[in-house]
Length: 254
Image 1 (cartoon, rainbow, N blue to C red):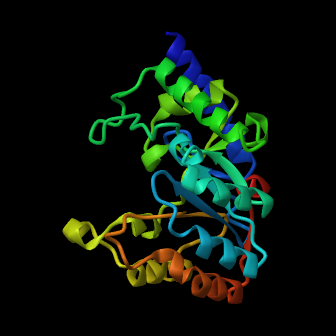
Image 2 (cartoon, one colour):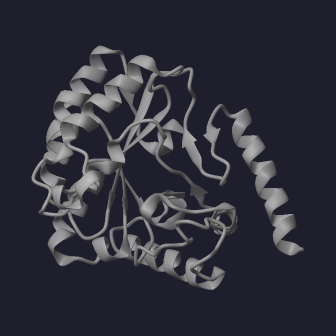
């Protein structure tokens, strides 16, 4: 009974988000900003790879764009990534959580079937914030949260809200999140050229184009993928600038 009352409260908060001109999916996550504004949030997730860090930082600096980076506890505690994280912070980019141990919260085929308990979820996320705090960032300064694997349900949304966090996810419609795939994955593999054109095609054909879009890219990918999407970021940003888009940190967009 308590859970269902919590869901009612969550649904009420979703209604409030709707009044603020953001798009909320059926599972309680904000997946898009104001569709009347030509604004895009570039978000980057990371767990075990960070090979795109230098390229991403230099490209964002070139265009004076602030990105939003959602990293796991494993990423924050990797000594090889420490300097990169400080560079992101010093560059004014948003640093937030992506689960401490990159847990899968719910079954892939039965989305309402939980794979973690409430305590496991909250403990893991609090541990993620402990890793972030080492870099001088407290939870209240980083309330936006992208779940691991970008996979969640209403129960996860409710538990995140209990911690005063805002669950967000990428905007659907493009293939950008497939930038982690590599040729050995067969039909799952999507080239960076295909991803690039899927973004521009959506921009040209979608009802609201890319207005308020949350565009997700991985900060690093498996070495077996040599065709890295982050190497096309310069071209992509240049083209979207020509189409009069501006880029916002996730906390600026909302």
